[in-house]
Length: 115
Image: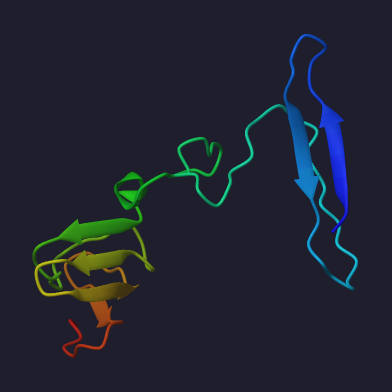
C-alpha cells in the first residue's frame, strides 16, 4: 500500500495520511478548487451544502408526505409530483395534473390507481 504524507501547519504536530488501496486500476481523485469539508463514510452529511434539499420535507413542492392517499381533486404542483401515503405505506406519482381531475399512479407494490 502506498502512502502520501502531508505535514500539517508549521506549528502543528499532526500528520495527515492518505492511503491508497491495493489495486491494479488507475484511479483519479480530483479535489475541487474550493474550501470545504470532505464527507467521510462515518459522517452524517451535515456538512453538505449546495444540493438543494437536505430532507424530503425540503422538497415540499415536489413531494407530499401524508397519512392519506391523494384523490382526483388533490391538485399537485405539476405532473411528476410524488405523494407518499405513510399511513398505508403506498406511493403515487401524478401522471396528469388537471385541476380537479388529476391522475395518480400507484408506484409501490400496492394497487389502486386514482383516476
